[in-house]
Structures are given as C-alpha cells and as structure tokens.
Amino acid sequence: ALAKTAPTAPVAGSAPKATNGLAKTPAKTPAKTPAKMPAKMPATAATAAKAKLATPAAVLDAAIAEAEAVAPAEEASPASPDDESEAKRQQLSKGESWRDFENIDPLYALLGELGTKKVMTEDGELDQELLENYLQRLLAPGVITKNKDWIEVWATMNIPVEKQDQVVAPLLEIGLGSESADTIADVLAELVKGHRCKIKAAEEAITTIFECGGDEQGFISKFLYHIFPKSPTSEWGWSRVGWSWQQWWSTAEKVLKALDPESAFECLRVVLTSIESESGVDLPHQPIWDPKRLGLVRAFLCTVSGLQEDELCAAIDVNLE
Image 1: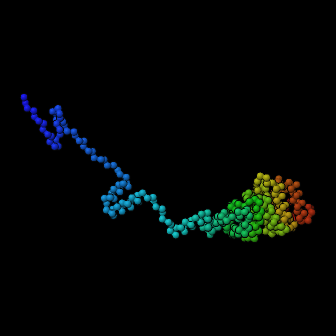
Image 2: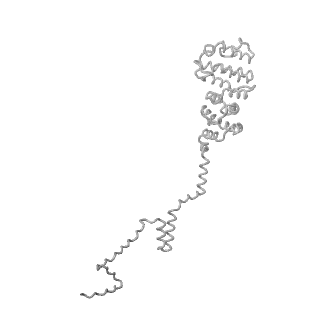
Image 3: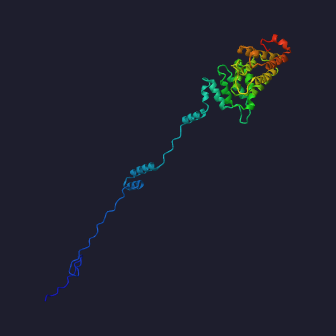
C-alpha cells in the first residue's frame, strides 16, 4: 500500500486546486473599453474646456469671440447731423418737387402749388385771397400759353359746382384788367366747352361783373361767338348733346340784359356780324336761323335800342329779314 500524501497548503496568491484532481483555469478578466469622446462638443462646452487649459489672456479672447458669435447684429450707428438734414430735405420735397421749377416752368410749379395749397378749405369754403393770388400769377405773361391749359388748372383746383361762379367772377375781373385781357373770353369758353365750368356758373359770373355796365373790351360778344352751336354753316361752333340755338339764345339774353341798353345792342350786333362773316352766308339763308329765331333777335334789338323794326336795317350791318 502506498502511503497517503498529506495535502499541501495552498501557496498564497495561487489558485486552489480542484477537488477532482483537475486544475481550474483562472477566469479571464474582461478588458476595459476606453470611454468614447463625443464626436463634436457644443461650442460653449468646447470653449469652456479650452478655457481651463488656456492662459488668462486666451480665456478673455475666447470669451469675446464667443460673445460676438452669439450676439445679435448691432444696430446701425445713428446718422450724422448732415445725413439727418438731407433726409429731412428729401422728405419735405416729396410732393413739392414743383418748387424746383418755379423759374424754369412756372405753370408746372403753379399746378404743383395748387395741388398742395388748396383754394378750398377743409370747411368747404373758398379762400378768396389765395385764389386771387393764384389768378394773378397764372395770368402773368408767358405762364399759360395755351387756353387748354386752363382746363388742367381748373381740375387741379377741384372747385365744387356750387362755388364755380365765385371762381369765374374773379377770373374775369382780374383777367380783364391784366395783360391777358384779350384771351379771357377764349379761356372761359374753353372751360365751358371742356365741361369744367357749368354754363350757369358762367352766366352768373358775367352778370355779376358786368351789371349795368359796358363791355368796351368785347368780352361778351367773343364769348357768345365761341359757344354758338355747331351747325352746317357754323363748323367752329360748340357741339354738345342738348346744346342748341334755344339754349344759346337763353344764355345770350341773360348776359346781354346785364349790360346797359346801348352796350347790349352793340354787343349783339357784333356777335351777329361775326357769325354771318365766319359762315359766309347771310343769316336768313342758314338753316339754324329760322324766321322765328330771327324775329326774337329783332325784338331784343328793338327793345334795347328803342328802334322800330323797319329802322333796324339802317342801324346794323346784317340781314335779319
């Protein structure tokens, strides 16, 4: 028999032997996986991390750079006094560019001023002083060279219908006393035919200005000639729906009656002579002058002159028979 061998005490630090006589394999310790760093750190975190390792000066620079990166854009620096003055000038000039043309194109400048400084107040009243100032400047020689320009002037003033006679009256009064006196009849006729001024307003203004007076400048005769209705023998006349010989004669009677009798007779005589001369045909031979109409004219002439019908032919140079 073999002698039993006493078990050997385990050596410190050595693995114990298996009881079944087989040695146990020591368990492998798993290797530690190093922690992964974030692919990209946030800007603020990265800056902070760098700041811990940087010098104080670098820390300050980094802080400034970060602040500039996240701060909102600064507002524009305030304009200099010169820039502010220029901006004000531009703002004031809006709608008032006409001021630059006062010496170059006075009509353009006046139209701009008329549109800015209205002759009609906010209360609907007419600023008479301002209106007269405008009219005096408009009637100065060389300002208005075409009668049709008055249509634009009138439109710019924007006169209500019920106030039209209050504008026509000073136009006639100032105009007939100006260097443009010989064009005023043409101007008023243009306004009427251009549908800017109502014929009623023209009648009221004329009767106001010429009440019981004379018409030495021949304004009324010219005006009545210009608004005579168009016909085959009066091609220059005014063509408008509703405007007929009866309408013309109604206006003629109203304005002629405002004159003193002698002036009324002379004014009508001049109108009839002008119409016949321009037509090239005696009035009785013109379709628009039928016997009844010729009779109305003869009666008016006799009334204002005190003549009898058989005496008219010697006092006038047109045939009314």
